[in-house]
Image: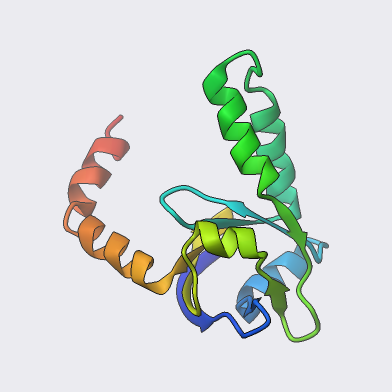
Length: 145
């Protein structure tokens, strides 16, 4: 699983180096492919292929007769790209995804257990600063349910 926080930069060709530890996890799973798509809260989600297949299966269960389900699936899957790190560990971030996440150059890559989140550096720091104060309150609410 993916853990930790790493600061990296997107190069002028739109490529981002995936941390070596994350690539090793992918290799240990017998895969070389990630799936990158629009995430929540303004970040991008990066899934190992096995986790992508699980998410895809869950989201296929969402009824297409419900407007919110259609909207979510359209936005989630239409933005998806299959990406394979090159020999230097870089993946190409498509322009539409960089635009969605308001990424210019500096990013923060965050391991969130079964997925990786990629944030524009300023957005991540803003999220972190506004969320860390309520961390204990949130933990109390979700862990007591």
